[in-house]
Length: 337
Image 1 (cartoon, rainbow, N blue to C red):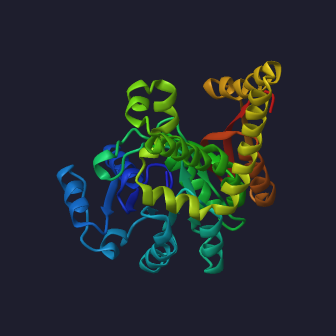
Image 2: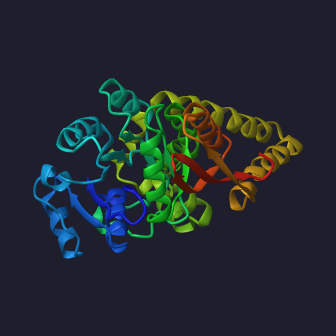
């Protein structure tokens, strides 16, 4: 898996909130040798009550591990990466679960860590926080972005196998900057819109009546407004330029809707909603074409380019196998992509 077929995997999770805690619980449930660490003493105690080892010191948690997942607030990840890298061997894979990637990828590259650090972002979660909200099945079927560097393909392959086989996620390979542009519209702007809608309701003189009548559209549209505010602020601030660029596109479309409504142009209003509905229908169920792609040793440049193109086209990986130096991927592309 990480060290090869049949080899036992020794893992650690640093920062065991909702995402890190869900990784910890899933690896433990799968029978891996895994331990956790969190700066909060109560969180460590909760992990032990769940039957999962949790060390008192970070260095003890990561010592002798084959792979370490880094969680915690976004602003803390660079310092955590440096600390964990110093406390682990060269053969230890490192990855994170933060929601922005470009800045941390650049930080790792400047410190010569990209051969064993693969930036990651599991696209799963809830509006709750902490280990109490964690669930071992959170990632099953979910997209999990990994951002391989040119010198990090070996680490990417090993980590992809672990994520698909044990965590049950779909690996989406992407360049770090492309991830941030895509995540801005897919995840971060929705937090802005949810906050704006819920905030407008909170300020309304008819607040209580609005909340009484709030139906599924309001509840669905404001769900992530219940996310811990500091976590949302860290996410938006960490991807500010891309979020603002994506928000401009959303604002332009909203202006078209508002303009058609203001002028009484029912045809344009209908056309814009039909256009929007196309994306919604595609989200509900897209057919995928499966393909197997192999790369012999020495074709790492072509492999990296193919992986990044796959993710940019909306594709994902469900398997990765390395035999005699050659790598074979099972990939899935949206029908017609």
